[in-house]
Image (tube, rainbow, N blue to C red):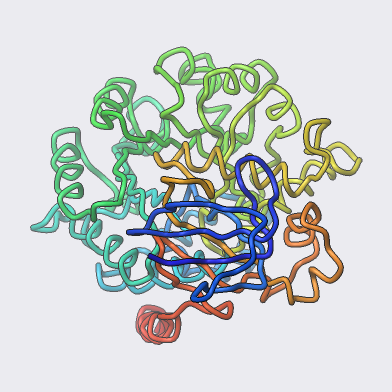
Length: 450
């Protein structure tokens, strides 16, 4: 049993002071408030938060961060960035994927994420051929999660076509491709590699990459697990979907798939008003990645309307160009301020703190999207993030100000410690395996980019 004592803690019921959390076998056994520390307690001058879920990651893309920031043509956009990504992934072996992804996962833990949804589509060998083990690269993801300690929700991706209507795939997509039978085998082979606390879902890549019949069959493989899909990230995607089906992509999904609280629609950037309201009512989570969406010039999600109609959202790091949980939440609010030309857009009467409302909503929606429960409560996993109250960002702060200080006014060093499943993986702001993982990462990129 571990006995952890914190000056403050964000509980499901609100902020509490002088909180003692007992942990047994990786889970919270008791939470007691307004108590002095006892002999043998591990005391922290910190504020304890539940760890966040990162709902959307392509781990291998951490290795190409910064490689696509040169102007290649006057109309550079997502589609030209995608060509850079194709060229990068053409060089990666399973060992390279493991090394790069482990670095991303270390950075996620240091940033306050304790579980990741890996939207994993890099299945085939460099020439497009099958590995002898269909889950070879899934094994690399599992290795990266084990080496970093992060919780894993693995989302094998089904990808069969280049565009709407079953268009033939392009050469750059050869490492992604599958058919329905092979994908079913891939899912089961991936399941066999997962540790006990991992979650397995499925991810039909997008309506561009699957036909309606394939979507139906892939979704059936999820059973009760999460279902993630890219949707409406780009204006061109929306226009192409209308040309194919007569409907916008989110409207098509809501009309033709049983979208419910097992689903997470990644990005959903370009919604009209009706789609926004219907998606909120469906119970599905919108998987928002504000840093990547800004980096790629995707657009601005209609968060003000979506939250006003009780929509659920989680945050993800997607391309992993900059892994920063607070930055994702800050980016979401700032995008709304720019769009609506006012401040504190995503606060409301029930919670006037923007930071707290964003954090609580992302915590709840993220856990739902990754098929887990979160929160500092008895029976929940001991996934805990401790904000360092000695950091200058928190000088003079009351507990109700801490999340606003962290998200909007904090810099590096605001997170002191992170526990995942009761094990402390981050101490003094640094991951305990960070140096070894970074060494392997540097060696990998030196070779891959040579």
